[in-house]
Every structure is written in structure tokens, then in C-alpha cells.
Image 1 (cartoon, rainbow, N blue to C red):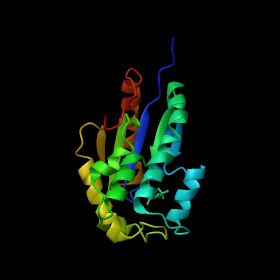
Image 2 (image 1 turned 60 degrees about the vertical axis):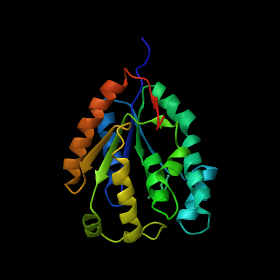
Image 3 (image 1 turned 90 degrees about the vertical axis):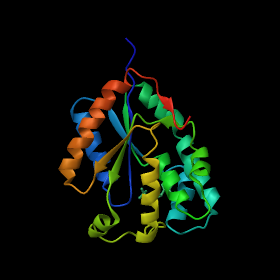
Image 4 (image 1 turned 135 degrees about the horizontal axis):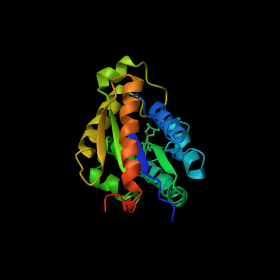
Length: 212
Ligand code: FDM
């Protein structure tokens, strides 16, 4: 019998929503229940393109706004062959940020439409599930100071949040909104349940193409 494919599961949300913590906990929980799972994160700062992105985020280099958008996108495309291979091998991929961060962050800058921003990511593997960890700017502020990287200001994060709220209206994507203001364990339980349901249904479905 052919191996059943893994699911592509994405976590999105503004800074401080707990994405990375929840991705790590989800991968451990899936593995402990005997489901092969691995974590990925975007940007993947280890590739040549990823190093250019990392230098930009750390403010060690300047890049024109369209250019950095396309580099973030290229950083996803360069991982697609590996992602598809792992999914085919039955490994579920838990992804910390994806094209939705790409669109939300660039379109929060002046002069960028959602449509232009979506273009370079159109056709990427369509996630089987995208969980949006929702947290208000006031609740995010209670979780401490932002870091030193580019985009880590409350003003910009508010604009990014508005863009995410627009993106979650798109019914071509399997969005689930999670209230991230609750305890880590409470959020985790919801995420595990949604993920297991998704893994069970995705194994009988073809992987789709994003925004196509
Ligand atoms: N970011 C992330 C983008 O602007 N575009 C993208 O496509 C992606 C994936 O990069 F500020 C931004 C979001 C965040 C930064 O930070 C990456 P982390 O801490 O590595 O998630």
C-alpha cells in the first residue's frame, strides 16, 4: 500500500502570539503519538537567500521593498521540492510562518496591494490547515518588549494585524482562528485536535496550490 501523505500545517499570527512555542509543542505531541512530523520556519535563514533576508531583518543591510518581498517568496519556493518529498513520505510539516506573513508584512508598507503581494507566492503548496493565533495589540504589549529586528514596533505590528484580519476572510484557505490570549496548554490542546483531524483528512486528498 502506498504511504499516506503528511499534512502541511501552518501557524501564523503577529509577534508575541506564541507561534514558535506552539509549533515546537505540536511537533513533539504528534511525534509522541506516533505521527511522523517535522518543523520548518520561514524565513529559513540557513540558505544563501535566507542569509540575505536575515541581514536585512537584523538591519545589517538595506534592500528595496519589492526586492525583499520577492526574496522572502523565493526562500519559500526554494524549499518546495524538499517539502513535497517529505509530505509524500508521510511526514507532516508544521510551518512557523508562510506566504501569509509574506503578504501581511509587505502589504503593511505604503503602496503595496494585497494582490501584488500574493502574486509571487501563488501556486505554492496550499496548506491543509492554517491556524491564525489571534492576539490584540494590547495583549501582545503585556507579553513584554519587542526585539531589535526590523518590523518589531507596535505601530507596524498593528498594521500587519489588520492585513492578517483581511487575509483570514479568504475561504480558499482553510483558516482556523485560535484565541492566543489563553494559557499555553489551552492553546496547545486546540492546535493538536485541529491538526490530528487535518492529518486524517489530508491523507486522502491531493495537495492543492495556494491562491489558484
Ligand atoms: N516576514 C516573514 C516577512 O516580512 N515576510 C515573510 O515572507 C516572512 C516569512 O520576517 F518580522 C517577517 C516577519 C518577521 C520576520 O521573524 C521574521 P521571525 O522571528 O524569524 O519569525
